[in-house]
Length: 249
Image (cartoon, rainbow, N blue to C red; front, side, top):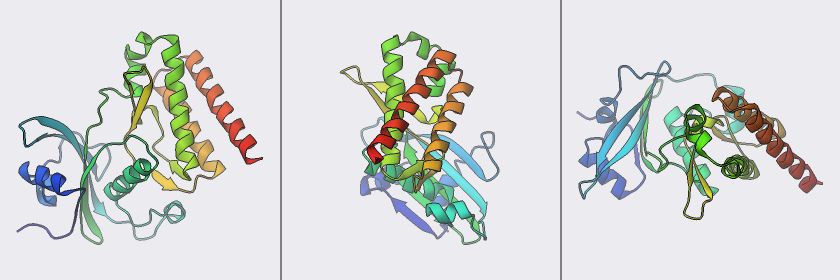
């Protein structure tokens, strides 16, 4: 017997795709749970390949969350409007919030949830088009292959995206180099896709904005960004902050 609970498909096409690939209910989805890739207790991410109607195979990711629900909400969850939401539900809502701002995000396919105190939940999203994150570019040779102009433009694009998020009265606890996926378009301009949106929340207070940029700087340093790159990024963040103050005045 199939488990009862919430099933939310992004569209009829998404439902048909997932059912064709035996991912149309929470039991089938949790059968994908990897045994060796559990990052935190009660959380895991599984990569799956979905067969399209025309025979093509497309990569997608299943983000799983299980365990006992928090009974007493944290103050941060109350302030941000995320109280009692599972991590997959936060991801689902965070992707939509970013998409509503016109940002590039993974395509949502489905959300599954069951249980009141002991919860199982999962969200399925498509992989984003760029193959490598900013973190991977910095850690490997991708960053070094870019011209100085391209590096500068990419840093500016990252800061511009953060500015757009904050202007939309949103904060992002997931701000970091691992969650930006850059790609040059045909005109040589950077487009950025954002992943791991479970930390998206409302109320972009000055404290939240400072936190987001602080996390970005720390993540870039941990990814191996050199001193010149970090200095350039900090300068762009400072310029944006000064611009915000000027606009407010």
